[in-house]
Image (cartoon, rainbow over all chains, first blue to last red; front, side, top):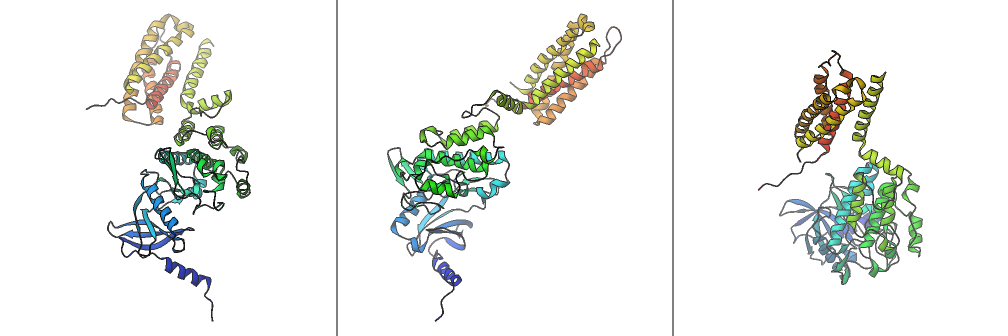
Length: 345
Length: 119
């Protein structure tokens, strides 16, 4: 008797998993990606004649709670109609009972792949767009809980999309709360089974401690700070070892200041990162839009509220902001002075 | 306030100050009033034309360059007129005049004119 090779087994699994979309308007084209509990396919909407991304629960994971989680995820994304959030077009069920939902197909690259090639102002403008999308979600009572550069896509025309709302939490008008998934994160690379949702390297301390009831919008503010950290230092705030330490009880471990990694990081931006990543939720920015506003101030050459600048630093900022008029007035005064002495001579 | 109006006002004010600097040149002190009036008029004309340019062309480098050129040309016209002794002050008038034009050019380009809604 001959054993099947791994390759053959993988192929058979893929064939078995291939969704039967015969009773739907979708025609699967190819597999785009596979997570622990679901697979994303490129499919064609035969009615509208457009390509969509189809997220289908994996056969092995098609348990009632997972099915309900997928439905809830689709509902969460559907209520967030924003240019920075990938829209859900449709949701349904396959003949074999598996749940799927169709969303806009994004032909882009992940932020963590693109960030290294981008100039600082460009990175900051992308970051502002992320903040806007997150602020919108918060305004609609949704906390993402797994914000990280890997979950941000940059489209071919520069559009910024916050992805993977699979572990989002819905805050029901500030009273009751419900989670899309309280204890399970399909996309997370470092989650402790049963309690921690998200990715440890970008996770707020209260989230890393596993106290899901305390996780609210400040957790996303922390993650935004961690994303900004990544965009400045070009590495996550916590490496694998530090992330492990956080999982083992040192959740309040502070990250190394970005300027220690890269001394070229501007001080005001470091101040924004450190405030957004404060261990205590009440010490962080109150809203994602506040973080975006701080970054906008930096880009406009204005004073960043979280940063106490020295006299020299202030003068430098004023000079770089008003360089041309300062130089013109100086040139005029120098010319007048020279002419004055010229006339006396 | 529109860009031409800003150019007119700024050009006029800077023209006054530019003219007043003649006080520091002893031989020109007795002609100070005439110089201030001439410099103000030059500033008004330059400011207005720079303001109109800024309304048509939105470019900081071009705005500064245009201001510099207009300031230079108008200052040349003034400098071409000799003083009672028949002496010309090309360098003394054209250099600051051009720089004042550049300052007005910068200001009119940076200024965002407020639009009033019309029904």
